[in-house]
Structures are given as C-alpha cells and as structure tokens.
Amino acid sequence: MCGSGAQSAWDMLSDEQSQKHITTGSGDLNNILGGGIHCKEVTEIGGVPGVGKTQLGIQLAINVQIPVEYGGLGGKAVYIDTEGSFMVERVYQIAEGCISDILEHFPHSHEKSSSGQKQLQPEHFLADIFYFRICSYTEQTAAINYLEKFLGEHKDVRIVIIDSVTFHFRQDFDDMALRTRVLSGLSLKLMKIAKTYNLAVVLLNQVTTKFTEGSFQLTLALGDSWSHSCTNRLILYWNGNDRYAYLDKSPSLPVASAPYAVTGKGVRDAVSSNHKRVRVT
Image (tube, rainbow, N blue to C red; front, side):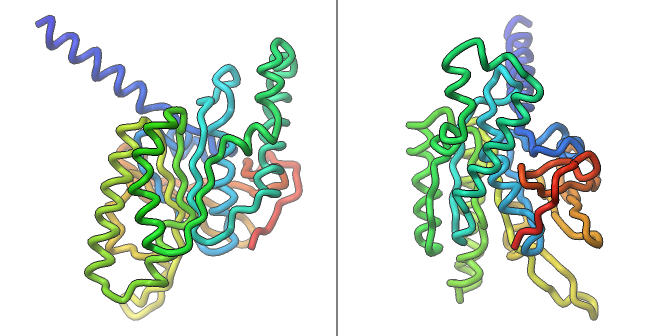
C-alpha cells in the first residue's frame, strides 16, 4: 500500500508540474488555452499571413522570462527562425511592453534588489532568447536534432518556438513520402523534448488553400502529414478587422474562440486595450 501511495503522490506532482504555463499577453486567449501555453506539450499555432503568428511567438519568447516573483516561469527561450521574420526592434518593443505591465502590477517590488532591477531591462530579455536562423530543411532537421544536447546544457530554457515549422518542407521537397517520414520523425522528437525537459514547444504554421468537396478551403500547411504532431492546435484568423483565435484541438479543453489584439506593446486583450492596433505583414 505504501508503494502505491508514493506512486500516487508522484503522479500528482507530475500533473502539477505539467500545468505550468506561459501567458500569451491576452487574458481572453489564456482562458481558452486553460491558462496559457502549457509546458510538456506541443502547441501548433496556424493562420494567414499578417494575423500575428510571429507576434505571438515573440510575445511568448518574452513572457516565458517573466521572473517567478512576478508570476512567471523565469525561463529562457529558443527561437528557430526559418523565414527571417524575427525582428530585433520588435522584440525590444515587446520586451518594453512586458516590463511596463510588470511595473504597473508590481510598482515597488523591483526596487527591493539590484538583481530585480537588472532583470527588468529589455536587453536582459533579448539576451535570454537563443536565436537560430535556418535556411533549409536540412539545417532545420540538424537544429532539432541538436536541441537535446543544447537543452541539456541550458536547463533553464522553458520554451522552443519554430517559426515556421513547415516553410522549408513546402519549398524544398519533391518526394512526398520522404517528407512525411522526416516530419514524423521531427514531430516525435519535439514531443519527447517537451516532456523530457518540461518545456513548451510552439510550432508556428502557415495556412494554404485546399480544394475539398467542390470548394476551396483554408487548411494548415502539410495538414495531413503533420496532423498528429501537436497536443494543441490554435488557429488565428480575421473576423472583419478583428483578430480571433480558435482552439481547434486539445486533449482536455473544449473548442472555443476568443478575440485578441496586436498592439504596440505586443499581444493583448482586444476589448480592454487602449493602445493603437498594429496590422502586421
């Protein structure tokens, strides 16, 4: 009986650890995701160009660094950029927005220590994003294979973002069967990494047009060969001039949608934001 009791306590601890999550910057978006982007899981985020996929990816790379004393994970980020869409100026801007929000909610906390003051500097946030620029599918495969060694040496990484995961596989591959096998192997490796290192893996994905039942429909790139690669799937889309997120897949959460905004400070709630919205390209 003692053995089974200890096992049960361990399971409870594991479950509790797996509930660690990273805020998106939008309370409404966090709500449909069950608190935010979860560690130990792979989350795919898809959408049309300009809807804010990269903005959300950068936001998560910043928000994962929010110190523990301010309600964050105090982790670091790996950003694998396959399209060249990672803009340092924008990262700096989003870091400033995050710091501004922290100071607004904790106006005196950072004054207690010099380390607290040092943490809340945009340069500190930028320094804790490990950036990889990828120019081919072979480089992408090599980078993902290298991740395990890298994460073993950087145990404070709490999120790995790939922007976008399918770009080079759509551009460079003629052999569809080989492409499917390679992607399947990469997805298994990414799921293993998420669980082994207790971190979130976020795969940004493009949308393509598919002819189904007599009409054209938007679908995520490599949808069929990539369909089992993630734990959660979030679709970003336009509704008129407003941005929405739709939770399309989750093992435990209901299908749901929520509005969000991309502001000068980053991803925020659509309704309560008083900031000018930014239309990204």
